[in-house]
Length: 437
Ligand code: UDX
Image (cartoon, protein in one colour):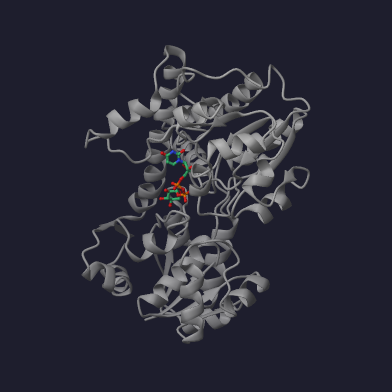
């Protein structure tokens, strides 16, 4: 089929490349001419494993191209996917729909009569119905995306489920043709109305966020009661009804999706007269975890971080990503900097983005460089290479061996045996902690 994908960020670039991988002819559209030029040359302007290979292969093979022209896209495609961003509004918690509305307006103006416009962006419930009413010349469908950064290609090619929000059998038929290959391979499909399709996405993200905040609330209780949240989580996860996923306690969730989707959902529900106070609590617990890391940092530094050299391991909001949007690691780093600490950040992928957003923080080119001379180390993004740091070697590099494990994955006994003062969220202070040198 001939498809277009409007918006070439994480979602759109991945969707475009994966649709080409499924055998379709695809045109990606973006108003940003630099992005279009990079993608046309087979380059992906952000870090996403496997994506660059797909883009390069399919642009070279002619199945995938990019343009800034809606006219060209409208004439080309039978089905147009809208994959633009819906950031949090500057004046509140609601979603800013400016990009979605202008993308629909632009493609509807140029699309062939009866073309199918498929929204993939995360939007407040009711958006699809509004867009359908506004664009009678074309047909609208909603097909939410659930991809995780770092796994975007796998999540798109082998989705856990597909959701089609449609009003006609024709729209369903067209979407079934687009996704014939994954559907043939057994991917579950839920066909539903617009409102439910929109809600599936926000409900899924809210549930994931709730799981994380639940375990982080348990971490708070463990801290107060002398329990160990890692063991608690391990035991909870053995129950199939609960499951292991998203039960890692730590500095909490960040990124371009969970925090803003949660707020936008609570906001939209309130507009509809439904009080989702639960989600406000989830958000508040999440933000408190950042405060807790700062409190532990102060405690380990004898009451104040003023003048302390602090190494922050991690800048991306999660590993395998260079995305720093609402990153807990950088939030903590910037706040310690404001408190007078001398902060040095290292991240394997997000250094350029971090430098641009926080030019006044210090940056190191390697873990070793970040550790050298540090009085406190904060482990805030769960990159595998941080887990592999040898505590004995690291102790020889720092000025004072003190560490806060904000991701709950380091081995407390090993670090303590190597002479470190070790703190983790929701974990008891390790026994046998050595005296500071
Ligand atoms: C999320 C959803 O998973 C995805 O389905 C949706 O489409 C977009 O939002 P993403 O933002 O890429 O994807 O990140 P995800 O892997 O969900 O992680 C979110 C955050 O939660 C990260 O900051 C991560 O470090 C944190 N997290 C995750 C925890 O703190 N504990 C956990 O147990 C799991």
